[in-house]
Length: 351
Image 1 (cartoon, one colour):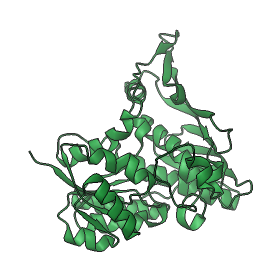
Image 2 (image 1 turned 180 degrees about the horizontal axis):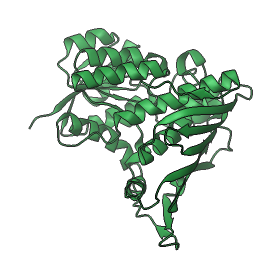
Image 3 (image 1 turned 180 degrees about the vertical axis):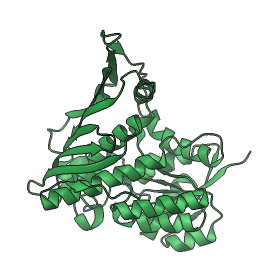
């Protein structure tokens, strides 16, 4: 039985619990190597998960190991260079969000992947739920007619991460590897705060559901007392005229969470409460709310991300999240941060 030969680049918190632990259990994957900028951490993860090779030199790992693909789960400031090196060496790439920090970098990676026939995708576990699959099917069926307006919101307590107070968050998650103190707080490392860390979940979902392409963004961002943004409000105009408001808040009280999307069209509307795993559709022909099918996916959805990547490499499945979602997500965020800095609307930099 052929297996996909994978290396995991970045084995801190999410690289371990979101990827490495699932790949190590996947009968169709062979984890060949792990990389960390800290050799001791790479060695520790390799020993824990039975990985034969470990590195603190990314180029050496790619050059020396016989790989099919890599999962990149490092900090956003190094995503572009790491992904480019992997693509240049013929490797498929699955990248954690935020994908990259600049639209031109996203376009360059997309061009490379297209030229070389390689998979280039982004990690969005929430999209792998039956609820989101049902919602996308309903939207793509045309039941709502022409989409004209989208309202979407994502909030949870991550304020302490933006202050570099990692322990305040991860003390509630015993036994889970912890990110470095400034991984979410230093703009030189993470780019932005709520936009790149949390709103990216929401933006990815809207793009995956609708297939829309952005044209212009106007954004306000409030950093409160942090070096990065904590509360965001964005208005997006898509190239077909659809309008959207996208908001995110990292300052909710601990334990509260909101993740909602309302999509309105000329023929009806679709409402999702992703936090509660429920949604419904109403149309002109059938105005009574019709519940969307939704199972209790739980933590299973996280493991579906690397599992799909492995099977896409083997040619058994299509990549679940299309490359365009990753690229357009970066386009929106790139324009949003430019807009917030300038105080005016920012056109999307298209590839």
